[in-house]
Length: 254
Image (spheres, rainbow, N blue to C red):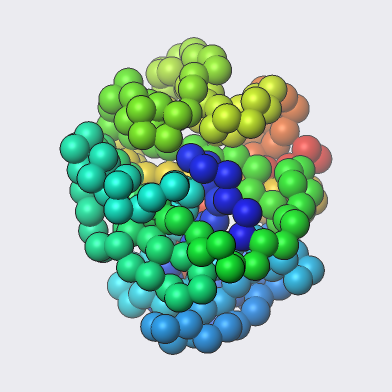
């Protein structure tokens, strides 16, 4: 897996029902699922063709999406993150032939996984946004915008592109992970009161936002916000899958 350092490079759904979740996201986003053996049991990948875009594993009682950020040295980054006020939730662990990873959270409590890929790990070329099924945006809801931005800036080298005034919702900060896209790689904002903890949300590209809304509803999910048009011309929704995991969809087509 080619993993540019300091960038989100993988996404994982933790859920209590992988079969149901696999069908839901396959129907909504257009992925296919592929089961593969792992040291802890079966691991399911969400694919575009033969290429994995995200993964899924069974964790009873815990349902959420989490992102993997690639780093040069997992163990060194654990120390830096803890020194910066983050927390270590699962010590560094090796998956032979694939990666070394650790489960952590930033100082405001948003979960992240840091990892270093094994050089022997396969690295197929992945499609890029706006292709259907790719991950088109990363969004941080945090209890402290300035402190949250400072953490990711110092630990991973992300930079601020622009602050947008969202009125009563406060400031929406666009950030760049280092690849210099015109609109950046994601945004950060102070979380709304109804969001209980700081967290990351990930936007999956779909063919049409209105068609995707229908698929979410038919699949037993729930649209929490939208559809709405955003700067740049795209259309988004924020939603929840039938098991309770929050996710978002993005399309250039209404």
